[in-house]
View 1 (cartoon, rainbow, N blue to C red):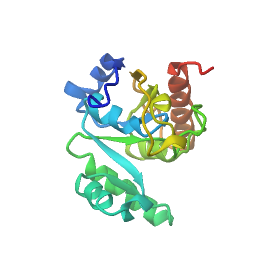
View 2 (cartoon, rainbow, N blue to C red):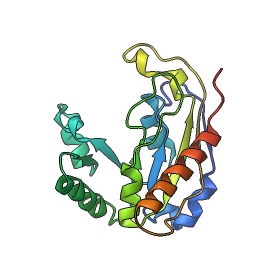
View 3 (cartoon, rainbow, N blue to C red):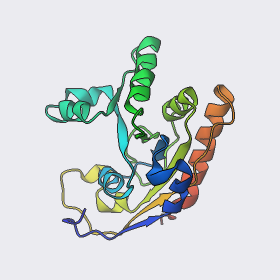
View 4 (spheres, one colour):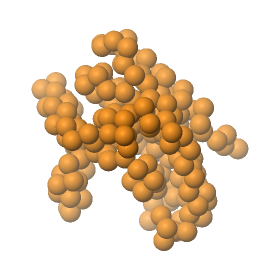
Length: 196
């Protein structure tokens, strides 16, 4: 990020205080996915130990796959109910040291800079493990390196990471999952800059 000479602003860090000292209570972070620089922004500036949840297909990429596995990242296997259950067990194990999970619930980077509908996976995990969800809004990453521009030069544009208040589970099951998903989507959406 520094090598790219990008100006970064982080807002709402105080919202992590309810997660305990230095954010040591595990949670599920969810963010909109604007571009490749989202990952650098979160890893460099969130300031909390996280384990990424990744598509199982990424495990096959040379070096990246094994590197992420050794870093304790969690590969999501949706091939069967048993595989999904194993994913949750793996996530629970990865969070025992107080780390948190990071998920892009849109599933992929946006094509047009606008937020896409959220999938249920991150919120089902939060429901299963009864963890709070912390929404993050990313602004500017689409302007730096959009999906359609992969492998080309970046454009210098300010980046802003907004950390919203945690959303705690109120129950367990379908209604709680849908509430977590809806409230997270709304919080992230409120933080997005209007695109012209």
